[in-house]
Length: 595
Image (cartoon, rainbow, N blue to C red; front, side, top):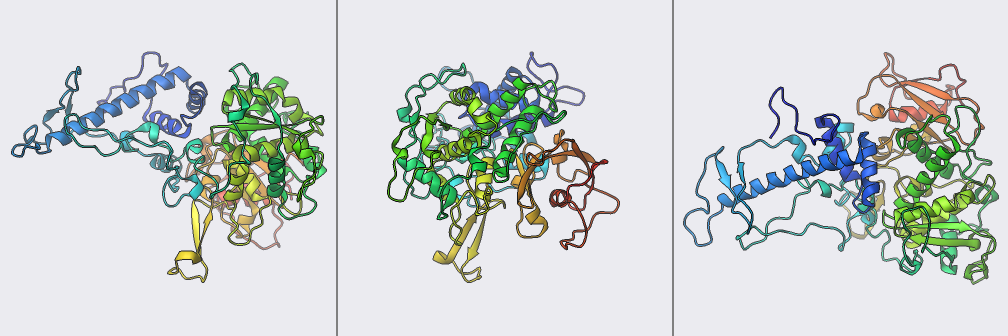
């Protein structure tokens, strides 16, 4: 029951402060967001980070919430039984009762009877769903992951996790399945790792995916990859990766700007969080890694200074960013780390019909694991390969993501019905939207709108059957957002799933280049937020030597009009910002706006 006026909500004894209703909602949302497929300690570490409370504190409070939900369900079941006629006919099992009277459930064997008040009001907190939570908190309304509006590969597989029906005691018939509105652990509308492992491909073979069963024992929890034995990349894997990266383009090999680009931090004062890109090309990959590094430095483990982190803090943030990307691509169940090794002499080093070795992909050692801690140990062990300034870091990461997701699944992610070529790297050597989405949400969707969109071959809505084309976008709210100048010019529309991410960090696509925009406060994510706030801009290729702090007023006295003409000289960064906050003014605070 809700506390009376002037009373505090009961909390566990170890809590340092009472839990507000908003915190309880956030706790439910965090429990729904971070899947139970994660290791238990890691899952509750993330939940605690989201709420800025201790792991044990969150866990104990969640147990209290779940226990209360079970008791309410038990009471409702008892009330329903009391109104159900007995099988022998005649009187009701418990007799008639008026609203507000007390009813009792028949106790199970060895269990004391429990009593509830049938008319006790149910708190809105107890029946709120994950979608409603997002809508109330951030003004979002996304398609459910398992519903008809979700992409086919994001639906729960037939053999996936589901709720087994229970039977009423002595009733002799099955009850309705548990409602996701009452079972907090099953609120998975926004659960990446549960929904995105749902098949991925459409009848594709699994041969080209990482064979986890052959990798031996999983690693321990101490950061070493003991028992995770690597193997040279197979011919099928190397050939499949090339086909995904380049499509029919010749020659099918990575440009030097991709395989000689490491994940290296700069040395500028107050820009110690920034990665440095050497040449144009892999900016989409660099920006996505940069965004996750910032998430860890600003909102993750406490750092001395997010602007000037120590070398140890930089390494920690980079490891967490790489692990997060690979683990998400593996659906929260597995991950593969590709490590470039010039001494490798594997099957992919030999030419074959339709395939020629290039001295890079064929030199990969593939380490696969089903343990996130083992994955973290693998990345930590080989971190120097990722961070070498002109080293193979970016190429290693891209191969790791593809094998973690599975070659056939990535191929099945991409919309080809409208003639789209399967190529994760575009003809101008830039990352395609599919590769950026693979890094942002864990699957290579071709679009940035929410859910799915249907097209008919003749433009007729009444047409159905084989003429209907379904385009797939983003099924769930992402951790890192995405904004693009193409939306300003009305070529695309980015959905709320990417515009309003869980963290106030966005990958920015402007003038065929990817960079990063971020805030230090999550308040700006709220719908209808009207107070001025600061955004920081970082361009890993811009050889940036100053901090760009942009003050955004989302509700100015005179809103900026939308203008797609090229007559006015306005920074494209400003126009990207206004795709998220229409009409907002942007002040560069003395810095020269980037044009």
